[in-house]
Length: 457
Image (tube, rainbow, N blue to C red; front, top):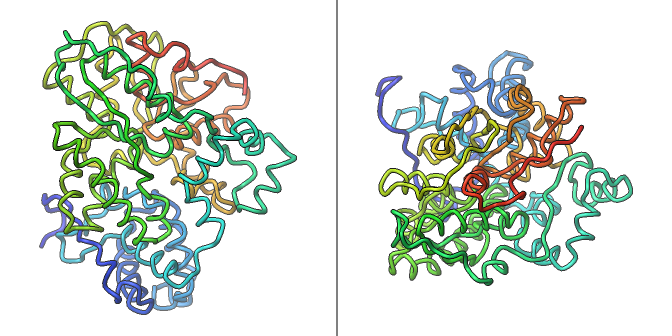
């Protein structure tokens, strides 16, 4: 095997049902092997904070080599990994099929599984990851929940920080009283039968975030697809369990994979495509689940049938052509490409989609926002998340009159907060938007929901 080979990166099945997977000594031995390779290479020094932490540990050790780094300090490296997969996908020359067999994110994932198996995952992290339960509870008291979680609320946020370990300064998503699933029960938008893509059918896998925190993404998706002749159904069996994956709870992830795949299988049999509305969830359905339950045929079928929403719109544009009626947005778009969209290895589909709009000016930022899902809002991580994302935020500030869009709603929110911190008196959008909301706006379907009303930070 040679360095710089053109073979595509491959990933191994995750053997989480093997007792050796949870053996701490064997896991730390594998970490030591990987860390030593990383120390000799250091190409990933400018990605997440995991690599600077590792290299600082080595450089400040007695020998300047990994052999004098305490094994107990490996946890500091594992805790900093956001599982964005960018080292695996874009930087590392030693990923499989290279004989060095380096998969840094999955080794960090194994360490977290050991921690979970040993009961070391903090209570607050476990409870925050229960997105369906939290969303169901919060939607009944949405105004109160949003008041309590508002980062400007100096009465409640310090108390929330103490109980949940969520940094008091981190912006948090809002909850809605009516979920996307509930809204979808209303009369569906009329399907344009004369559209070139008429006859397509798609299930919208709502995802926990769209369902509870940002239904407008789902509504924009339904409207755009209906305009293009696509009949849609909204289905949400449960969360994809990425928060549980990040915590190392493979049993819950496997159970969710089987349940969701079984539920969506009947739609696939009827000719429906599966469209995930958030890239992290699309990544789970396409790539992570088949590595965790590799022998489940329903999971394999679901993986093959799943599209990211931007990927699906581009597929329509290429194969049938988009429905007429798109108008210029009138503003440039600063587009952040989410790490979990990039990890799907499908190209810059959100940028391709937005460039289908008339007179589109799309400024692409292809770098990690630093948020890392729930990781970036935790006490002790939030300042690091801002540091990692600062190059993104500075680049976004170059065109303060543009829409700020990200495929990942959490990343978009984090970027906007960082822009506010860095931008001082610059006029900033009121909120970030998902790219599909801009397509809906270009069709005249989204009204003011996609309009980035400016304000003084």
